[in-house]
Image (cartoon, rainbow, N blue to C red; front, side, top):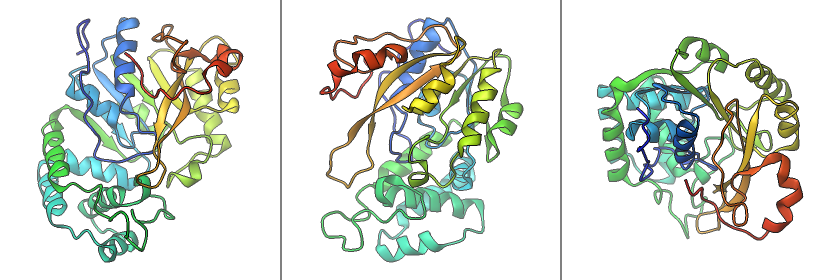
Length: 321
């Protein structure tokens, strides 16, 4: 459980590659726990995706247990398999033996899985061998059809992936739920008196290019209405920076927020990642403060527009927590 001396000294990678992955945010969450004198026992992610924050907090003993949910059945199946002793062993065997070829990629891309195991491996294989880790139906293989500069297996390190699966499976008794449900249903099932909720919903902008399951305008508004009236349990929400989302959440005083820089990697291998701004919103009073002379990170959303011209040339993409 979180303590005054707790620090996440290193970040373990998720099994999944995600543009704008949230692994670095784990350190921010630990700071938020400390600043608000919180010691949550359970960390809950209704939109878990790569689950990198939950996994880092769990491995650092910042929380006792985690509960995961994702509406995408491929992702939910992967985490169910990873945290099952028998399924995780099978998954490791597939990782070590699966062909890393265009023909096999095409097979997995068109396959209709018949079991949880098959769906779990399909998720992992396509994520590690597709452009920017996207599972979207239009995402192609790494290196394209020519495979001239980069090969389809360049992000599929068999030994590292198998070792990561094996390590994560050892935490199975600290995973309460892994579900594939609408987010409201999952929250009703998983909340406890000593929990912390982290929401990472589909982006407001360009989500249909990134995810298999996205929000429409009504669903973004429904999440706001839910959180606007959700006062009893601490929560943090991350979004891509959008004026519509800012105006929605910061129309009153119930929500605190800041801007953080995040590295996005939806580019060809060998290309440059780019810095994108994200909103970090919460019902808590205190967020970490950073040096706004050097970073976008931590700038008050309400102050950002007035100050942003000073930072337009900055390229820092980390949070010095």
